[in-house]
Structures are given as structure tokens and as C-alpha cells.
View 1 (tube, protein in one colour):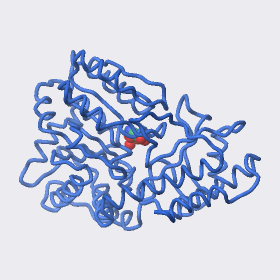
View 2: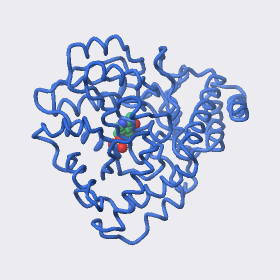
View 3: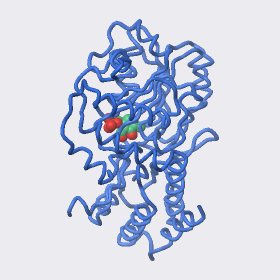
View 4: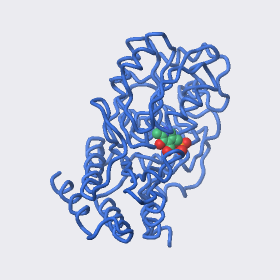
Length: 383
Ligand code: PLP
């Protein structure tokens, strides 16, 4: 199948607008020039609004994981205690990265279960320099309580590092209000740019704390980013991925033209439409929620229907031209995930649900077509 005919509905990378693709084909420029400084400054200004922060913002050449490692590696060192919250694969990744740089106090919950705030409170009471959280746990489709964790972190004087890789740019994120000292997003998720850049916001307090760390990463040292970013002509410490900066700038203009409120609303409605269709098809959502946790508004994770391997659903969907995601690691074959991020439209969601119904019908799980699609349409029309 022609790549242009494929509908990418996985939780990143997401489809990129033609004007973003075109932006990447512009000629190269000197990365230590007024032209580059202008692009960098424009991106940072728009991102301040996306992150809802007055903190410094840096653009790193490297995917989301580079941003996660930059955050932890620059901020903590030997002997520091870091509470690492895990209730999915990316929480586990943050824990593993933190363990390379500091002493980890794990706060592990079963993948797909909500975080117990009482447990976090108890661990914070014992003292820690920092705490890591994945806001939107892409592997399980759960939205974790960032505002509450931020409040607890502040109360116990711990620095709050938040992976907002699949929430920032698509869902409500308030870095300053929630007291997030370092927030990270990846370019290929809700911002709908190509993969390869991560963006981090860093508070004054975190920058101060970094000065005491002697073994910070070399390439992804956030203090080096601060020094270069503060120049009269802001730049990055090393040669940035210039075509990706062109693309991100264009993608951010699309975000600005839509407006963050409208963007968040669109993500919410479309994810709700997916959930309505799923309920109508008698499929169970995977995450278990408590009063502080919610279904993700950028990726929906569903249990495979009885007797069906979720890898088969994913593969059947691919044959129909729609790329969705399966479960990762221990969740492989058990769940499937539909991404709803970036510039996703109602038409994209409805096509995906229609194809899902066809796949489920062929596998004998549903007898007729249309009920799921109609449920999704009802949500979209109501909005
Ligand atoms: N954190 C979350 C929540 C993610 O969903 C992902 C990727 O899917 C990452 C981190 C890692 O990002 P990347 O693959 O861009 O390195």
C-alpha cells in the first residue's frame, strides 16, 4: 500500500501536515546565525503557551527519551534520592534512567492501575531530591494526576520531573500552576511534527540544583542548553537537526492557528468518541481508574475481546490500511491502542472505528456493522 494511503492512528508518530513536510526541504542555514535564532525564539515563544510556563524552554535534537535523560541526568547525581513512579512502560523507563544517575526509590503500581497518592505521600515524607511522573502513560492509556503529585512534591521540597511526552500539546498541561520543575515533550506526538526532537521546560529552581551536579550528561546537559539559549542570539550547544526545527516551527504555527483551547477540546471529543464506540462494541477499556486518574485524551487502550489476540486485531487493521498499536512487553497480545493525537480529525476517528468493526465482524466478534460508528458520531455531533 502506498504510504500516502495509510492512516496512522498509533500514539506517535502521527501524520504530519504537507506544509510541515515541505518546510523540511528548505536549504540549510548556519545554526549560529540570526536566521536560526529567529526560528528558535519563535518556537520557544509558542511552546511557552503550549506548556503554560514562564520557565526556560530548550529544544534538544533527540526523541522524547533524550529529553527524559537530559532532565534526570542534569538534575540528580550519586547519592541523591529520586522517587520514580511507575504504572506503565514509560514510568519504568524513567525509573531505569534515574537509576543510572541516582538512588531510586521505586513507587511501582501494576501497569494499568492508578497511582495511590497515599503511597507517594509516604515516600516523599522520607525525603527525596526529585520525583518522576509520566503524566499520560501511553502504554496503558491512563492520565495520571500531575497536579496532585506537583502539590505533594512542593510540600515535601522535592523537584518534580514530568514526562508530558503524550499530553503536552494535546491535553491540559499547566507547568507553572502544577509546579513542574522539568517537563518533557516529544515532537512526534500531540505537536504533530516529525520524530527527532524533544522539548524541555526547566524552572529556575531546577537550574540552580543542576549547578551542584558534577557528572551531568555531556550532549544533553541542560546547563549547556541554558548557556547557549541565553545568548543575545539564542542557539543550541551543538549542531541542531535543522530540518526538524523547520518542521517543528511550522507544526507549532498550526497549533497556534488552532489555539490550545480548541486543540485540547478536539482531542477530548475525539477520544471520547473512540471510548463511546468501544463501549458500544462491548469491549472493555484497559485502565482502571480512581478519583484522581482518568482515561487518556490522546490514546485509548482497550482489552482484546475474549478469544482474540490483540496482535491479530492490529495486523488485520494494517491490512485495511489503518495503523494502530498493540500492547508493549507484558501487555503484548492483551491490549490494543488507538492514538488520537496531533491534527487528528473526526473523519480519521470514524474511519478507524469503521475498519475496527469490519475486523471484529470478520473475526466473528460482532454480527453487524455500524453500531460503534454511530456511537462515535453521536459524541462528535453533540460537541
Ligand atoms: N514517554 C512517553 C509517555 C511516550 O509515549 C514515549 C514514546 O512513545 C516516550 C516517553 C519515549 O519517547 P521517544 O520514543 O520519542 O524516545
